[in-house]
Length: 197
Image (cartoon, rainbow, N blue to C red):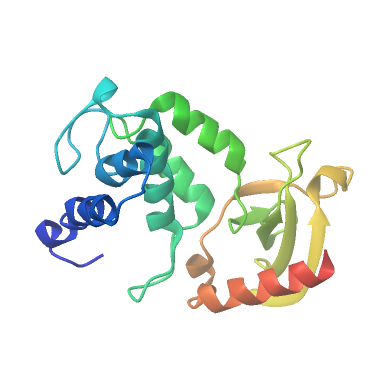
């Protein structure tokens, strides 16, 4: 993330050329390699094309690539909360195809897997699975009490099937509660939730 933008931008033409030179790559894939950093309003790179000049697969790839860059952990720190990333992308006018972004958000759910949320019960929880019938009420793994300021025994709640006993109140940032190294905790919560599923 701290690379000189001029150097960083070189991955697009170089990647496209390497794929083309290798042969046997479909034209659609080559187009995505060339266009995945272009923006609908023409402010992207490397060519500054816009609107209808950007093919549909490249528009899709631009959304996926940007979302991944926001939520992925790097050497510089922990990635953004997935729900916060979607909220940020939703207000970035001119960057993405709005219809494709809308479909992407609907597919990911209002609170994508990996999102940290605060529940009405005063607990922090991480979204560990979606409910296919209700994307607003996923399965979560509770891990922290905001009322006591302490970690709690992790428990899973199927929000769509808990009969209103708990629900998501807001997106939460673990750092606001003194949880600094959330990347390790996230891995532990995912592993435990996978065993419990």
